[in-house]
Length: 264
Image 1 (spheres, rainbow, N blue to C red):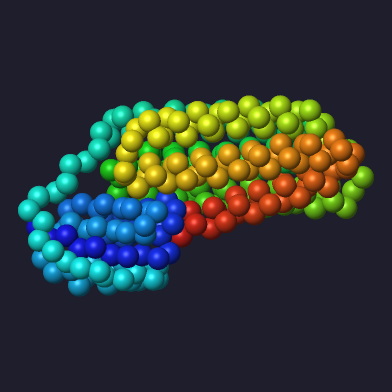
Image 2 (image 1 turned 90 degrees about the horizontal axis):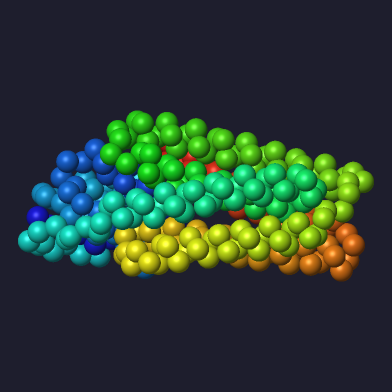
């Protein structure tokens, strides 16, 4: 058994991790992958030479660099998969639940910021569900799921952008700032609980680290919606809500493109 370490400078989220896993899955020589997303590191445990594995990774154009290859007597112990799955199911449930809540209250309160935040929650739910649903499946199945998820998320983002433009060029009502602030605070609490659950697992696994990064980003988005609600109150204007909504929809669209890369 050998262990080859790669430095992959463009690996910074679950999309790149999933793409690498799917790319290397057909290689029987690959026995285990260990990801360190914050440090852009990938350890490949394999038999035989590393040339074909290196070539496969380089085809993804993630600016990889082979650092070293050394003998590894045995595979490292893996984390408790059942425990991680339970936590990811809880995080998925929280994200999807707040998608429904924010989408509903966003339409009621006329807040595009809440609607955008709800779609950001849905985007995260899709990533978590994709990972949970596709585990152990064939590469073709994973690609089909990724393709459907990516196009679905892209469609939602385009609908969101069109609504931002419609409200920008029309005399739409000023959103109800009270709803914006209260619901965004509840979503913030939900994301803090999710982050606590993920950190409680004390896992170094890449997908758990990536989930923590996603949830941390959601907390920032929640803060943006709260700030927009405060500005709507003081300025008596819809513009802060539209600006925040447009920014969040751009995040959702970027996530859609990353997911669609998995289907190639």
